[in-house]
Length: 307
Figure (tube, rainbow, N blue to C red):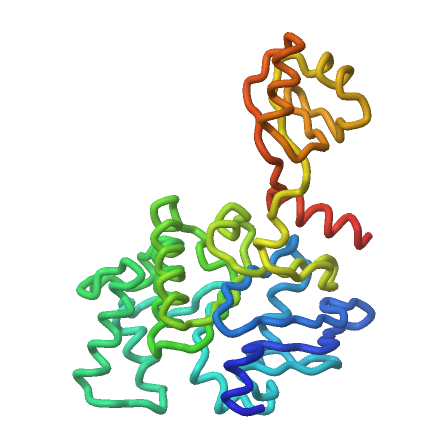
């Protein structure tokens, strides 16, 4: 596959990707497609196979069967040419505990093929640390780092070589809310500058704010893969909140899809007209608006539908 073919197609593409451990299928015939410019959210419960899939894409685990292409080349066969163009943080960052964060990055930089001038290497290290909110002058050994600081250091290592593709496993693990917001903005900025991002996360609210496309794994199988705006578009339903929920349900009959306390989901494409109808009949309407599915419900329904 040519570089032009990647630009017009997929940065990551798998066909029937499978990993067995004895009789257990950790990953079961997954057809993953990550397009150029995506921020792809890879979702699923613990043990669903997300990390194993990411490790196969990076050549860290060999598949039992199936094919994987990353940046247009077969993995793991082409790992020598592919991996220098990828930044990755999978299953927690590793670092020499007796060295500072900056010293750890200097060692990593020294292993790369693009050495450059010493001043350039130092500038890349400083820039990577500052990008993730770490102080380049901090001389403490990484054994003294908090979980959040170690996570930031792992992200800095992934960003050092300005990768074309970022593969991140739970990148905001251990961060406080301010840290999560900062990393989210950093990833969005990188994406705006042309970096494709494939990330796994349990924080569905963050995925909704950041991702353009999602895939859902359930017991090793890819049960959903779609653009996020398609999954969350209006459904032809209206949400109504009223303390008169049972009177409302009695009035509207079969148009009521479900009742959850004071909230009703109603078949309608006209919230204003529905509001007027209810108020005219003496019901107290607190809130009314188009019903949009939340990502949590979409993920749970996709997993339940595959059972």
